[in-house]
Image (tube, rainbow, N blue to C red; front, top):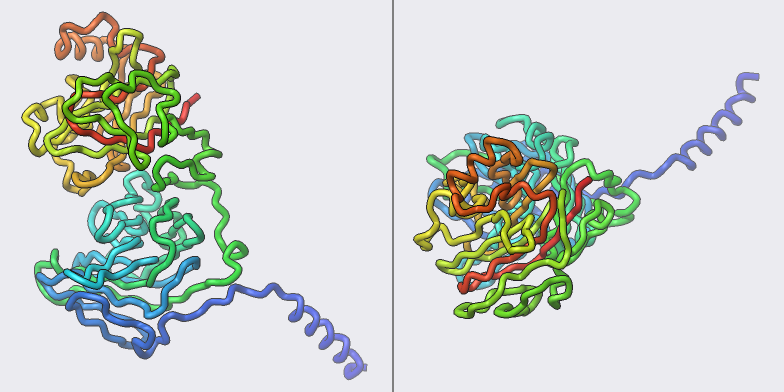
Length: 433
């Protein structure tokens, strides 16, 4: 009887194995023994294989080094393990490319490995192009996922269409929407220029990728962390779901008044330098909101993003100005300041949050009596209004202001025309309850 039972049991086991769900088709990018399939792109760091690990050793005073895959990838899910020593900044490039002339730079998206105190590992840095696209200044849980130097840690990147999402040790670290580069190589980075001495290392192992059935294996997006859309004058699906809307359509002056002295080119609305134009003001009124505006500072130029603007054209101003060369950029009139009332932090370069040669993103949040100013994902300050402290602040710094200035419950959005060249784009707003 025992022998007779073996056949049906074996049949059941066969059926169970046949019906078992199939896992993703992972492909190893590193064979654990050699650098086959990898090529040094630039830099002088040494890359070797020891005990199933790729080890990159920094050389002080040299350019950043990259070990790149010979193959290029467009859509994929990538996983890897890494550790760094001696404060070595590193990263994993995705959808990246290499210049063929000049300095032969590697450029493209980088999943950051950042052992500094700010702990921005798992954010997205646009290497040799636009700088930080997704810092972790607004993702505290992502920052806390960092385990420290000399410890093996786990990274994951899901790049599917314009969506680039990342995880550090299983914790969501970034959620970016960008289509600037749709395909490119993967590379391991080792810094050199910022090292005090030779010998710091970045190590990588268990590097694997999925390129098939990605929608099946992608992690569901439940909006756990802040989402950034880096495609100008568009709304991503996540933004639409969250209630964002375009306040400027990128092509016309629809929804705005006083367009004299402004021009539109390639999705950018600009002050025509040297003209005595009007301030561009929105048709609509807003009370509680989150405003996002991309701006580019012209050399020595000055402008402002106004909000809660009344019928007389008076309102609060997010100061946008060239701190480097404009003589008026002092005190409470510097970049990011609440004009004449609250000064922004004096140092906008450490950590590097300001891009003087490119577009930057100003955020203004108004909810109840609280006002916040942000720059490129970094909070500059918050202030409470509609109280005696605020009213005294206004009286002391703006003696000609009307009584109750800044305490308005609603107002318009306004872009300032000050006669100097200034560019704006990607004007969005989300009304808050």
